Length: 116
Image (cartoon, rainbow, N blue to C red; front, side, top):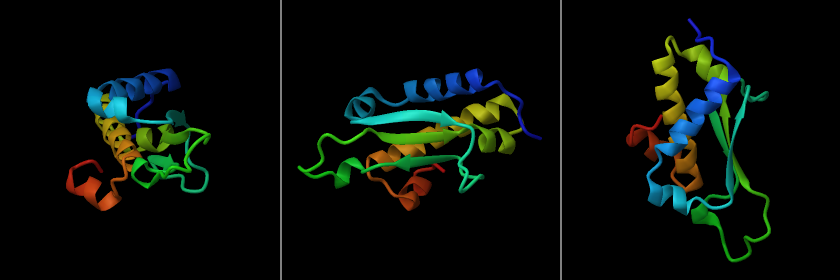
């Protein structure tokens, strides 16, 4: 059964998940913004998505670019969870997973590390 949660509460959970990122990683994040969106229209079951150029792929020509975006999709996360505790856990996993992509870590390695 899906969890009923206000958009504001969900955004608080995303902010709390970002606060869990170790300071050295948070400080290394560069030119990236985290957004909460209802869903991805093209892939409605997607939980999160990194849009941008990973830090490991940036070259000296990377300047003046718009910020990379990490989208966290509220509706599919709420739909897959049964409790608020499930939502807290899934938001953290999704946020860390997408930040991993910002650092150039691929899906296979993130799964090996336990981050979805």
